[in-house]
Image (cartoon, rainbow, N blue to C red; front, top):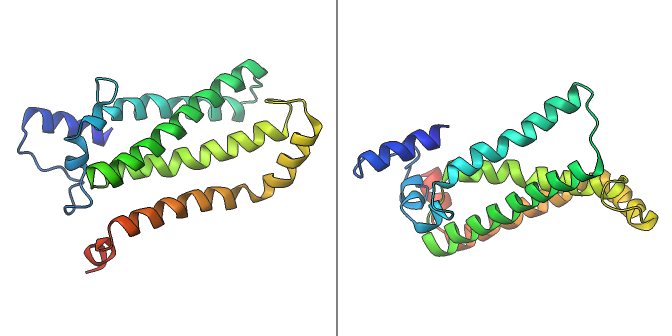
Length: 174
Protein backbone atom coordinates (compact mmCIF):
# COMPACT_ATOMS: atom_id res chain seq x y z
CA UNK A 1 0.00 0.00 0.00
CA UNK A 2 2.88 2.36 0.76
CA UNK A 3 4.10 2.11 -2.81
CA UNK A 4 0.66 2.99 -4.17
CA UNK A 5 0.52 6.01 -1.87
CA UNK A 6 3.99 7.05 -3.02
CA UNK A 7 2.97 6.59 -6.65
CA UNK A 8 -0.05 8.88 -6.18
CA UNK A 9 2.12 11.52 -4.48
CA UNK A 10 4.57 11.33 -7.37
CA UNK A 11 1.76 11.71 -9.91
CA UNK A 12 0.49 14.80 -8.06
CA UNK A 13 3.96 16.30 -7.61
CA UNK A 14 6.66 15.18 -10.08
CA UNK A 15 9.29 16.77 -7.79
CA UNK A 16 8.24 14.62 -4.81
CA UNK A 17 11.05 12.49 -3.36
CA UNK A 18 9.88 8.99 -2.59
CA UNK A 19 10.72 7.42 0.76
CA UNK A 20 12.36 4.53 -1.11
CA UNK A 21 14.73 6.73 -3.13
CA UNK A 22 17.90 5.81 -1.26
CA UNK A 23 20.52 6.51 -3.92
CA UNK A 24 20.70 6.51 -7.73
CA UNK A 25 20.71 2.69 -7.85
CA UNK A 26 18.13 2.00 -5.13
CA UNK A 27 15.32 4.22 -6.34
CA UNK A 28 11.60 3.58 -6.64
CA UNK A 29 11.26 6.93 -8.39
CA UNK A 30 13.56 5.95 -11.25
CA UNK A 31 11.66 2.69 -11.69
CA UNK A 32 8.23 4.37 -11.41
CA UNK A 33 9.20 6.90 -14.07
CA UNK A 34 9.69 4.11 -16.63
CA UNK A 35 7.06 2.76 -19.01
CA UNK A 36 7.63 -0.67 -17.47
CA UNK A 37 6.08 0.56 -14.20
CA UNK A 38 2.65 0.72 -15.85
CA UNK A 39 2.84 -2.18 -18.26
CA UNK A 40 -0.91 -2.73 -18.53
CA UNK A 41 -1.81 0.96 -18.51
CA UNK A 42 -2.08 1.33 -14.74
CA UNK A 43 0.60 1.25 -12.01
CA UNK A 44 2.08 -2.21 -11.42
CA UNK A 45 1.73 -1.86 -7.61
CA UNK A 46 -2.02 -2.27 -8.10
CA UNK A 47 -1.29 -5.70 -9.61
CA UNK A 48 0.87 -6.53 -6.62
CA UNK A 49 -1.73 -5.54 -4.05
CA UNK A 50 -4.52 -7.34 -5.89
CA UNK A 51 -2.35 -10.34 -6.73
CA UNK A 52 -1.06 -10.90 -3.23
CA UNK A 53 -4.55 -10.93 -1.72
CA UNK A 54 -5.30 -14.29 -3.41
CA UNK A 55 -2.46 -16.26 -1.72
CA UNK A 56 -3.40 -14.76 1.64
CA UNK A 57 -7.04 -15.73 1.14
CA UNK A 58 -6.07 -19.24 0.02
CA UNK A 59 -3.76 -19.63 3.01
CA UNK A 60 -6.43 -18.51 5.46
CA UNK A 61 -8.96 -20.84 3.82
CA UNK A 62 -6.53 -23.76 4.09
CA UNK A 63 -5.88 -22.98 7.75
CA UNK A 64 -9.63 -23.02 8.28
CA UNK A 65 -9.80 -26.49 6.76
CA UNK A 66 -10.85 -25.73 3.19
CA UNK A 67 -10.11 -28.24 0.45
CA UNK A 68 -9.95 -27.21 -3.18
CA UNK A 69 -10.54 -29.14 -6.41
CA UNK A 70 -7.91 -29.65 -9.09
CA UNK A 71 -9.36 -26.89 -11.30
CA UNK A 72 -8.85 -24.41 -8.47
CA UNK A 73 -5.21 -25.39 -7.99
CA UNK A 74 -4.61 -25.24 -11.76
CA UNK A 75 -6.10 -21.74 -11.82
CA UNK A 76 -4.18 -20.63 -8.73
CA UNK A 77 -0.91 -22.04 -10.06
CA UNK A 78 -1.54 -20.32 -13.40
CA UNK A 79 -1.88 -16.99 -11.57
CA UNK A 80 1.23 -17.61 -9.47
CA UNK A 81 3.15 -18.66 -12.59
CA UNK A 82 2.08 -15.43 -14.27
CA UNK A 83 3.35 -13.50 -11.25
CA UNK A 84 6.62 -15.47 -11.34
CA UNK A 85 7.17 -14.67 -15.02
CA UNK A 86 6.18 -11.03 -14.45
CA UNK A 87 8.59 -10.46 -11.54
CA UNK A 88 11.43 -12.00 -13.53
CA UNK A 89 10.60 -9.73 -16.45
CA UNK A 90 10.48 -6.76 -14.07
CA UNK A 91 13.82 -7.82 -12.58
CA UNK A 92 15.36 -7.95 -16.06
CA UNK A 93 13.89 -4.58 -16.97
CA UNK A 94 14.96 -2.92 -13.71
CA UNK A 95 18.52 -4.23 -13.83
CA UNK A 96 19.32 -4.12 -17.54
CA UNK A 97 17.02 -1.47 -19.00
CA UNK A 98 16.07 1.01 -16.26
CA UNK A 99 19.30 0.74 -14.27
CA UNK A 100 17.69 1.07 -10.85
CA UNK A 101 16.24 -1.19 -8.18
CA UNK A 102 12.98 -0.57 -6.36
CA UNK A 103 13.09 -1.93 -2.77
CA UNK A 104 9.34 -2.56 -2.72
CA UNK A 105 9.57 -4.41 -6.03
CA UNK A 106 12.39 -6.56 -4.68
CA UNK A 107 10.24 -7.40 -1.66
CA UNK A 108 7.54 -8.66 -4.03
CA UNK A 109 10.19 -10.74 -5.82
CA UNK A 110 11.11 -12.26 -2.44
CA UNK A 111 7.49 -13.29 -1.91
CA UNK A 112 6.56 -14.50 -5.39
CA UNK A 113 9.64 -16.61 -6.14
CA UNK A 114 9.34 -18.96 -3.12
CA UNK A 115 5.57 -19.09 -3.53
CA UNK A 116 5.95 -20.28 -7.13
CA UNK A 117 8.53 -22.98 -6.45
CA UNK A 118 6.80 -24.32 -3.34
CA UNK A 119 3.39 -24.39 -5.03
CA UNK A 120 4.74 -25.96 -8.24
CA UNK A 121 6.64 -28.77 -6.53
CA UNK A 122 3.80 -29.39 -4.06
CA UNK A 123 1.33 -29.61 -6.95
CA UNK A 124 3.61 -31.96 -8.90
CA UNK A 125 4.14 -34.32 -5.97
CA UNK A 126 0.44 -34.55 -5.26
CA UNK A 127 -2.35 -35.46 -7.61
CA UNK A 128 -2.93 -31.84 -8.59
CA UNK A 129 -1.05 -31.33 -11.86
CA UNK A 130 -0.38 -34.86 -12.96
CA UNK A 131 -1.30 -38.45 -12.26
CA UNK A 132 2.07 -39.62 -13.62
CA UNK A 133 3.61 -41.64 -10.78
CA UNK A 134 7.19 -41.04 -11.97
CA UNK A 135 6.71 -37.25 -11.95
CA UNK A 136 5.06 -37.44 -8.52
CA UNK A 137 7.95 -39.53 -7.12
CA UNK A 138 10.53 -37.13 -8.57
CA UNK A 139 8.72 -34.10 -7.16
CA UNK A 140 8.37 -35.93 -3.83
CA UNK A 141 12.12 -36.51 -3.78
CA UNK A 142 12.78 -32.85 -4.63
CA UNK A 143 10.19 -31.52 -2.13
CA UNK A 144 12.50 -31.48 0.95
CA UNK A 145 15.01 -29.48 -1.09
CA UNK A 146 12.62 -26.91 -2.51
CA UNK A 147 14.42 -24.30 -0.45
CA UNK A 148 17.58 -25.00 -2.47
CA UNK A 149 15.77 -24.19 -5.72
CA UNK A 150 14.35 -21.01 -4.18
CA UNK A 151 17.77 -20.02 -2.86
CA UNK A 152 19.42 -20.72 -6.23
CA UNK A 153 16.84 -18.54 -7.98
CA UNK A 154 17.38 -15.68 -5.51
CA UNK A 155 21.18 -16.02 -5.58
CA UNK A 156 21.13 -15.89 -9.40
CA UNK A 157 19.19 -12.63 -9.20
CA UNK A 158 21.54 -11.23 -6.53
CA UNK A 159 24.62 -12.14 -8.56
CA UNK A 160 23.14 -10.56 -11.70
CA UNK A 161 22.44 -7.38 -9.71
CA UNK A 162 25.96 -7.25 -8.26
CA UNK A 163 27.55 -7.89 -11.66
CA UNK A 164 25.44 -5.17 -13.28
CA UNK A 165 25.91 -2.71 -10.40
CA UNK A 166 29.43 -3.34 -9.05
CA UNK A 167 29.34 -0.15 -6.93
CA UNK A 168 26.12 -1.15 -5.17
CA UNK A 169 27.77 -2.80 -2.16
CA UNK A 170 29.97 0.25 -1.63
CA UNK A 171 26.93 2.54 -1.76
CA UNK A 172 25.04 0.40 0.73
CA UNK A 173 27.93 -0.22 3.13
CA UNK A 174 29.82 3.05 2.74
